[in-house]
Image 1 (cartoon, rainbow, N blue to C red):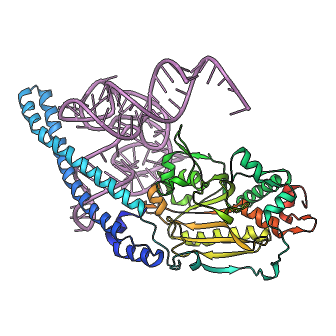
Image 2 (cartoon, rainbow, N blue to C red):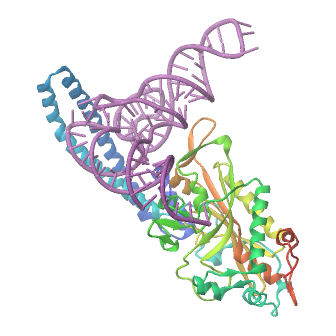
Image 3 (cartoon, rainbow, N blue to C red):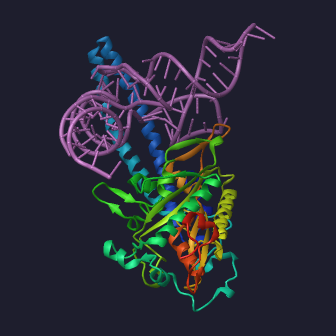
Length: 423
RNA sequence: GGAGAGGUGGCAGAGUGGUAAUGCAACAGCCUGCUAAGCUGUCAACGAGCAAUCGUUGCCAGGGUUCGAAUCCCUGUCUCUCCGCCA
């Protein structure tokens, strides 16, 4: 969420930025927050004064009792009654104001970096790089779901039987290939200085709020009602929430983590060819990278992360393109996002396999994730994360592009992990 | 799942109603002629102020009792011990 201090000093430029780039008008919410904040501070001033009075009176009463001057103490006591009532009233309105401000802040998206192109939809995304794919186009190539069936790699029907649509079952070499990819991605992360974490797949409500899935995307997460826990939609949630309410010493930055988890998404509202095969699932595997760093370094860090993820795709020899998301396609919490999409030759379409974002202070403000700089000042850190990579769509692209008349070739870098060269 | 005991600063640990002892560690400043000692200081959130600084809040969380709550009461939560179950 946005910092209230920024809204105090800079509200007009915030409104303008979000309107220009995201095409969303938040002037109403911002102005409400601004006015509520004025009221809140005024209330606090009065409340503080009254509480100070109360403290003085209370300690006086204590002293009189000690001295045994009961009558005087009783007179003082009477003085506290009205004060007490007033404090109660002001405290209540203070809390109400605080709550209203918070609720409004939850509804306002992040301000964007200057690089973000204005735009309303994915059509306005900026294509920064694209492999040439013209020579790859070929009607005879099969889409991955047919390959999966032909070689018995992934069984979608069986998943429906056991759980439901969007929960495929990987079999034999399909399962091994998937595991090989996970292992490959984790090892590459380790080599690049990311500490590996293995984290819980269920999180509590506080964590959901911490990274912004709640209250915004409540309907997109699976929820266990008995224990009130949420199944994670991405490893970002448990990994970033490790640092909730934490003050990090600047010398310990940047913090770099890589982690593999399954991801669970209800994907309410999806339909049609978008959900065919591996394109969109309720449960899928993903290796995620997360970094926490200082505001002055975070955009350089973002570039480094993009280069890193690109290097993975290149090692797998997949055609891909790189997009800078426009305001309209940008996530609610992000200040700048790059998407990487691999080309699916069997479907003749691009598949998003990674989304790498800098959230600036938007997440850390909610998380209270701060660092102490060399001057001992405490500042909000910047958080970043990205997929490195999402497995199903990589599988899809990989299977399709490596298909031959009589099998599927495994990319060289994966062969040490799979133990076989082809399917 | 049953029974019991607990949750206090970076750590240890006292505190049964009067506004958070003490020890250790770390850091900063001062002082001191010597492998170091001593002294002083130290946290966070919010607000006021140009600032030094001041006020309020914070003893797991939320309620309650009270002039006053770390302390008493209620609810929740987490940890530990024992029993049960168990990969």
